[in-house]
Image (cartoon, rainbow, N blue to C red; front, side, top):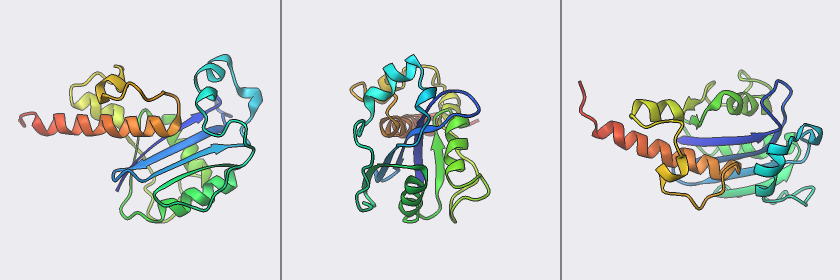
Amino acid sequence: MNIFFDTEFTGLHQNTSLISLGAVAADDRSFYAEFNDYNPAQLNPWLLAHVMPHLQFPDAPVVNPALDLHHHAMKGDRATVTTALGQWLAQFDAIELWADYPAYDWVLWAELFGDGLALPPGLPTNAFDVATVLKIAGIDPTGDRARLAGLPQMPQHHALNDAKLAKACYQIALAQIQRSPQP
């Protein structure tokens, strides 16, 4: 099962911390979590303007409903989110992880479980890159993804929306590759 994921975090630096994480499966089952234990001192003006307004639970210290395997949304600390994410992922067989520009997303995802070698059973030790698939398909990976996907109404820098956008762009790129004549 292809699972597309995205994270929002406190900056492009070594000691960054997660603000939110979103994942959507190929069959549209989704997981969304906001963290209540990120370092607010690391929030810069860009994050305050582009990420924080899109949080689903901005004023709630904790939102921890019973796990919904279809569309789960929650807010909690790293340990609580990691447990719920592991339970949500356990429903899938043969997982492939996909992210758009996964350099930070993948490291932060793996760190939830300890590191890339401590992942739950069935999870691969790497994530594939949607931007590379776009490039192979002849689509500019720096272009407007929302326009490409036909989803301009979705606010960007919301982890679940961005995961859904990565999924839509992947599907468009894959269709383009399949239509292209093979050498």
